[in-house]
Length: 329
Image (tube, rainbow, N blue to C red):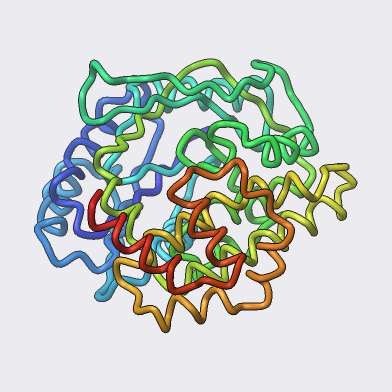
């Protein structure tokens, strides 16, 4: 039951060697690594070719222009030829037992998804912190259990990196793959959609994926305008999922849990957006509805104050406050 590991990359020369090496050093050789070079213009291409020339298990797909991680992952899935699929970011690494333990569990339970734990680091081994999903381990559970984890903000629920997926399960239940319109949270939408399909899922206690937060800091603060309507669309997806699957989640909780990323986007977007662009976002009818229904008390002060300014029809103050605070941070 071999594993296809899909790694999208874009201008990843500074980190990709570590990611590739972590795959090569796996205790099990039952893998193929598919690297999708999404229009890199740095030295990424040369590094990939160097490794692919040494190891036939490493396959490369590339094109000109940055099409986004969703498109890259879709292309990787199509190129994969193995029973299970996993995903690795080009700035993260795998524990050497990742392939062995994940496939061992998949074989033992004959499951559609294996869900492991992960470690957070700031590019320093002393900073490693294990993140546990706090759900039962080594037993099969249903997709309803998994879906409820979305609404409980279970750590790692939306991530691809700590899971492997049956290729047959993806082909059967989600032939559309990742939404190419999303440049952010494409993994969130992929998992939420896929988890609504009947399947068998197993969580294990092993922490096998090492997520480097330091490498992602700048990327996570890059907010594309197209993200905002898709974030508002995420609320609709959660509301629809709740009704469709009879989950019984209070709608207030749904609005509460989606508040942070939406106001985070508004806050950081003031660095690159004009006031006119900012005002267009907050005039969106879906955003107005969201603002009315969201409890702002759980937001950090840097997001809460602009939200209150917007709520009380002081959008320019909200914009200037966020812009100045961003410049000071």
